[in-house]
Picture (cartoon, rainbow, N blue to C red):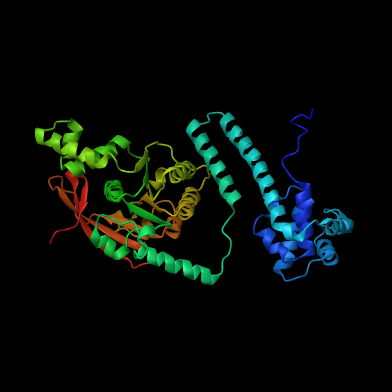
Length: 442
């Protein structure tokens, strides 16, 4: 009986030879096969080099036959690595059916997926056996690897005709305008009309950064956005690294019941408070929100939660509180690089799942040393790449000095970046006792 050590990884040498032979006999098949697989999907080293060379020749407009292919391989010093000219002739002669090139490629892709699954399993096993391994992080890494395998199996996005992109854009605009009510694709609005007037809401496939100094109102603003969106039926993943889920629920109950947060802290409720809180519970308990309040969260774990939620019931928005508290899977001495990798990962997640990602971020103290205390893009803490990856950057600013006796503060929303719209500012009211941000009534 064959031992596990002797068993070869999944592969199909016949399919690999047939695909390359078909590409060689009919160069128009090169593009068909390249749309399904890449060089590293081939198991045999020589077949990888042959595939790469054929694709390069096609890209340069060079015809590929046994003679020209052999000449190209000689110029690259690869002719002996692939088995010599005799092997090229063998591939030419043995090509079973040119018309089935796409089917051969699918077989190669399937075997490649199985090999990658074995590699992923080995990586998961190594992570799980590592000293001090964290079970939640290992599970998140495992789910991420499996989801990535599934996404690769489906195939990446291919180039399309420009006219098709134009047609889909028109259809998308029609959906946004409500001309196809059964499949409306509208932006996710904030609770404040004055802000929506400037931004048009928050748009899918975009990364929105909401930045401020500590205690200005980042979490408060994000919670008000989540509250409004969830009430409208948006499905939300709320990743709260700084605060627990019970604290967030208390804030929303205070907001909707109009009962002071101090009373929640002491549980010193009046009769009318209890009735108002009961009504608030009925309003928010069925919100389509999943909340993860783990103190250790990363792009990998958030991606895992997001994909699982998207598959089970759909997902419209992720809110992360906050960026600088996230863990990095790859530790480096340069925190800016780590933050940059995180924001790029979050931007990819927004695009891949067609959702809005709202990520809170901390500002540095630079504005405290200026006469003008208003924050700027340069004040984003740890990385200029945050600005680069974000589609929209909001900065919160309270222009007035703190006054403990005052219940309402002015809260300025500075729109410092909007990739597809104007910059500007909007001023709202922050009612501190009930965690509410509201329009200013003139």
